[in-house]
Length: 369
Length: 94
Image 1 (spheres, rainbow over the protein chains, first blue to last red):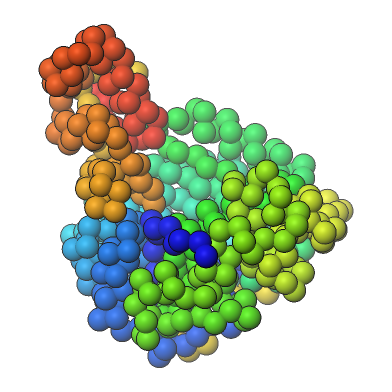
Image 2 (cartoon, rainbow over the protein chains, first blue to last red):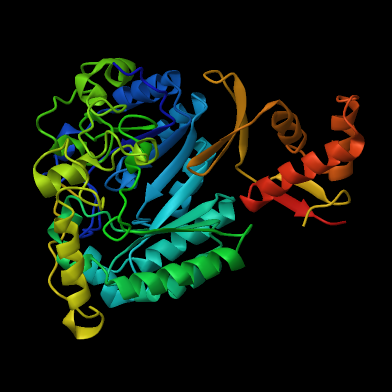
């Protein structure tokens, strides 16, 4: 048995309700209903238990966390437990007065998603263009002195506008710009052939991001995250299974990552029934892929196994049907051919700019939005 | 560029706090954290309010009488430079 490390970050998915419908959303394909959401008191208990476990960072996310009427109370409770509180938001609806209330309650930072600087591109991938709302919230954050991160999920449809994203981050006074390629799981996997960029587009974007990072050093931290479909080595997904992160879903399931509930061979526990500490330390699901004992070959004898922790279990499941298989992103994986084939299709397609945008399967949610 | 004449202060919303799990202080900033060793903690604590770098060096050197002052200054500047590179420090040159 491997002793449990200490988690640093709690990702609190407060709700699946969201005004956007992004085709790469990390929420599950089968979304729960608003009626199933945890109540305020339970979240406040979870925040306290997270701090006791060693969590330092709290990401309040969703769906759209602003849809929760009790967000101010949750921020205050998090700060009472000394957590650093990050709001991960679509910035819809823009509400400067609410943001001021959240800041007064102790909010530390805000991360605003940007779908595209091109209105038609944003509408294509998210169902609507919300850029005006994002600008207003960014301005409000700046006026309040809240550090602002812009997060852009990069895909075939927006990768050509990387310089525009950098310019937007400078204009809005962001301190951090995350240019994170789509992770092809869940909704994004369903839309993969329309979203995966070509190698040429990716190389160009990577160089543009490097140049921006160099130019803006000390002013804006510019991060560019490659898609693991092109790296030939798996990413250290969540810094290792149940190692530094834990996530709680709107209805209270505790998970090591956004997608883990898809692994139906594991039994997931709910914070309504168990303490976060008991789940983190003792639940068989959290221990299933912790450490190295679960690893198959070639991972088990690989010199990189302590660097990438065997890659992404959810991707292994989604592509091969086996969550314990070597991540197909790895060049040494028996099923790396699946990734190679997807890349070949991406290279064969042209740009999706202009009038030829393919139809995407947009995220849908049951219940009220 | 940080030199002894500069004045420094932790950037807004960079939080210095004790972490009882590691027994060390950490600097928390958006979605990240930095675990500090003993001298990093002392320097960071001195940066909670705006202060000249020279004063930080003096205070550190006074507490480390067996270390040459220029070595202390080098270490302080290196640490502050690392914080600045992460955007965690406000630097002004009077």
